[in-house]
Image 1 (cartoon, rainbow, N blue to C red):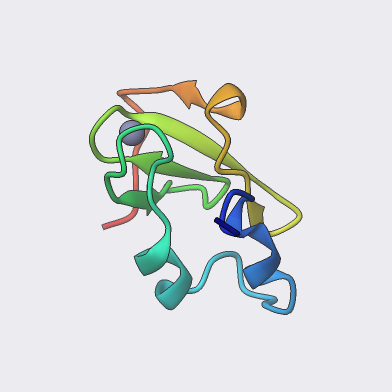
Image 2 (tube, rainbow, N blue to C red):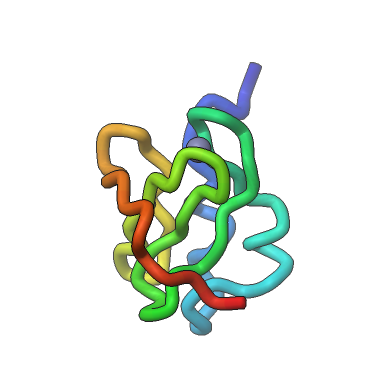
Length: 77
Ligand SMILES: [Zn+2]
């Protein structure tokens, strides 16, 4: 197994906040559900458990301990 680390390195060269292709491969590490960009583009929210994973320096931090549960937080549509 070599994929134990977060996929953060994939976005190092991308200047946009989060690109659609990257969003498509990201998933909540807890329930493996899709994540969506929040309305303020500062987080990725799981569609299933409503955890919001922070985006730091344009890199999504897909770590359960770093996420906060925010059911009411808006996401981009
Ligand atoms: Zn989840």
